[in-house]
Image (cartoon, rainbow, N blue to C red; front, side):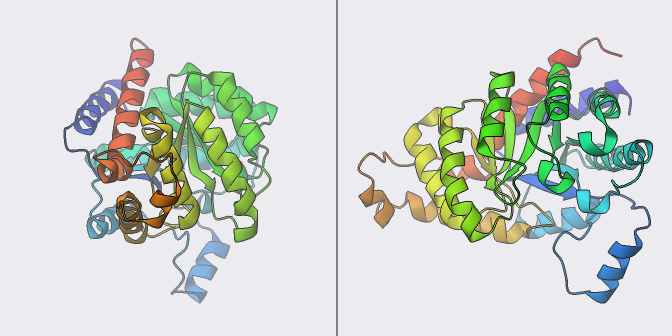
Length: 340
């Protein structure tokens, strides 16, 4: 895509994000384009036609799901379950580039529905090819958010290769995003804190907010540790997705009590197709409305809890993410200005 085209698209998207009535924004969606043949994936799909979790969904399928869930806009990246990563570094780079191309093409075709985010796998690509794909995402596709998933792609969050790619993303003016969960040992709070300090004050997105499909046992301790980290690290933007509702409720209370600066760094996502959009967005709305009710027992127990902002539902379901992403687009365009 020519830089002039994606710069124009991002400018229009930034304007929409800053409208007085913010969009309902799903901040965690996985989009798939045309897929390479994967016999194992196809065999599983044929054997279990009732199995939805993680099934590849293209732009049309996601838009249909968004319409049913009353979602205006989605921050979308590729679906790692649909992208081969066990070949040579060259093969892996080619497959990942095709997956990133599909996300960019969806945003180009449907700019009112998708914000295109990139994906990098430093383990599968190797550091050199990973840096090249960062440049391709930013300069070739206009991807102002670029994600890494140490859990799915099986590498430590604080590996040297990750720090190297992180610096490349920040140098492009893009926002790094990470799968941050208690579901594997690859993303501990200590590693995320080191990366946040490395690039401070540049923002990072903590996708899943310490959830990520973790079991009840693992998430109990990690949820509290991550919450404390999020509250003391002002450059971490947190997306609730694939996280237990009880821990989401604790986050909502703590972030609101911590003040407007913390509250502005919290948003909601579905993790589609690993989660259902309607269930997550409607559930998030209901949870917040209940917690904001002064009759709620949790409110009475917390003497220091000052209550939620007046537009708490709008903030959580899109406003916070919209303002954060609009600022990210502005920063990205300023960095990319004058580059070929």
